[in-house]
Image (tube, rainbow, N blue to C red; front, side):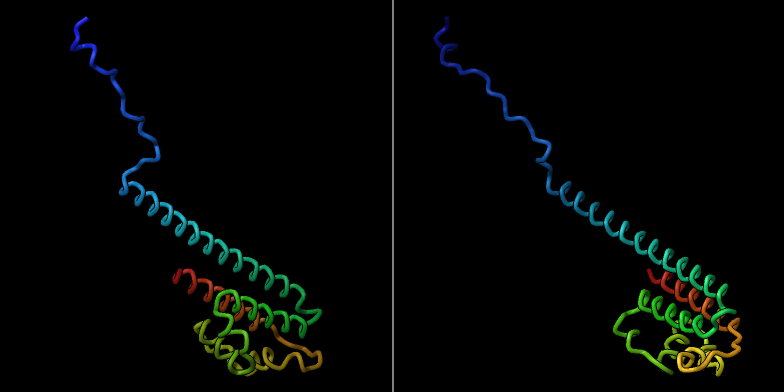
Length: 161
C-alpha cells in the first residue's frame, strides 16, 4: 500500500439539514402569515356574532309582537330591555349603561339616525310605561321603530368592522 494513501482519513459527511433550520426571512413570513390568519379569523368571528345578535333581537321582537295584545305594558318594558341589551352589545358599556330618560332617547335617536324616539307617544312609552297602569296602547309604531333601529345599528357596525 502506498504510504501517502495510509495517511488519508475517511470521508466525513456534513450533518443532515434539519427541517427547522429555516432562514430568518421564512420564519418572519410564517409569523406574519399566522398573524394575518388570526386577524381574519377574528374579523369573521365578530361578523358572525353581530349577525347572530341581530337575528336573535329580531326574533325576540317578533315574539313580543305576537304577545303584544295580551300584555301591552309588559311588551313595552321588554322592548326597552331589548334596546338596552343590543346597545350594550354594540356600544361601549360605560357610554350606554347609565343613560336614562331623555339622554337614553337621544342616544337611540343618534345611533338609529332618526328623530322618531322623541315622538311624544314613543318617548312616553319608553320612559314612563313602567309607572303606568295597563291601558290601550298602539304598539305598531314602537315595533317598527325598534326594528328600524336594530337594522340601522347592525348595518352601521357592519360597515365599521
